[in-house]
Image (cartoon, rainbow, N blue to C red; front, side, top):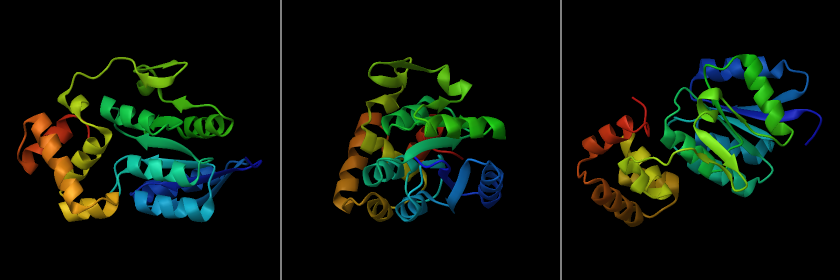
Length: 218
């Protein structure tokens, strides 16, 4: 990495995004190379700006943030992902670990802690807020949840969880197909599978389940 850490700030709330970018830009070793309001834009900006770190909110319209993280690390392997969220449910943490995020920060963290996290990740380390650290273990195979979830959601595949989050946003199967680059037929098959596994056969109930499990926000 260069002497200055190149950072992309991603948040769908303009005030949060602007305040974060302005505050972090003041650090002598951090350069905010861009901002984005959606995960789709984050992918585009990563290609354009080639940041060292993408600091990304978890719940945003459009493309799922975890799907975006996979795309970003596949096209720009040297870019590290740090998630920022007000939510710390196991499902979010597990998905962040599955996409090999190097950090997961609470929105309650001080600006100084966010700066420290960025520097730690830029130097090759990882940084997790206390609420997250207390629920994960790190071994030779990497980080994972300390206790395996017993929720019905744990029966779902990564793709089914992703589809469920989109369903909870009231997106149609055609819209889901568009953001996931799958066919409508494939999305329909995933929907049928997750409904069968959860024994839920109504989109409204699926949405309620996703919210209860911390897979979607009100």
